[in-house]
Image (cartoon, rainbow, N blue to C red; front, side, top):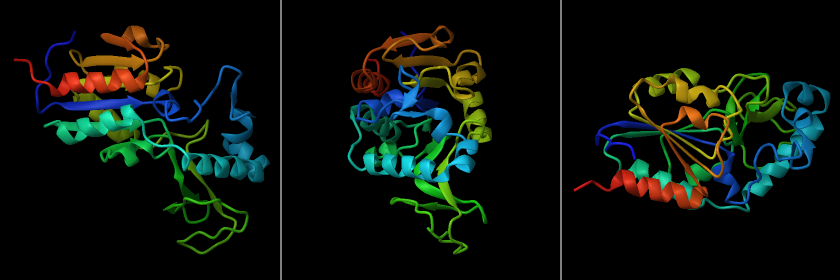
Amino acid sequence: MNSPVEPDALIVILTGAGVSAESGLRTFRAADGLWEDHRIEDVATPEAFVRDSRLVQRFYNERRRQLRQVAPNAAHHALARLEREWSGEVLLVTQNVDDLHERAGSQNLIHMHGELLKARCLRCGQICAWETDILEDSQCPSCSRPSCLRPHIVWFGEMPLKLNRISAALARCSVFAAIGTSGNVYPAAGFVSMVAPGTQTIELNLDASMVSSAFRECIQGRATDAVPAWVERLLTPLG
């Protein structure tokens, strides 16, 4: 058991697909190497978009529709509660592209791999909210040009978003937690090695990740059970 955390401490939390999986969204890479029955190389790379933009757009259009059919789970709600009730700062960094953290109430949030409900213009670079299908002739709301929108998703081979802000937070946090992550996708898998000596580090995961040995504490179990219990522990003063 880690020592009590100072009430004004910064807590940085990394979440991965294991959190959203309990809401009914499939994890990014299943045991068969496919994501929603597609090869990753065919739907999640810049090269795939150049090669077959219709397939890629159709794939993410389907993911957008699927997202409307699920709801935040107990883990999402517990993390939103921690942000509301913690007297210090809580920064949530997610690898997930869904909006379940927002729907649960989290506000101090970084989507390092982009957001499914946003589109990016290839002409003017504008990022805009987009909750419906991206069609072949969809127009950019900013420059009004047609046929120039792509999903605002960080694909394999592209740089994750806001790494400078994440790095700065990791360097000064008192607690770093990784929840529902596989530990095999970088740079997120290396975040635990970027915190200062003495930082409390904890992994909450269904199974041990590839980097479990780097954490001071590991809790294995369902996110919907483990995360609310951990949040309760943080918010309950010892006395």
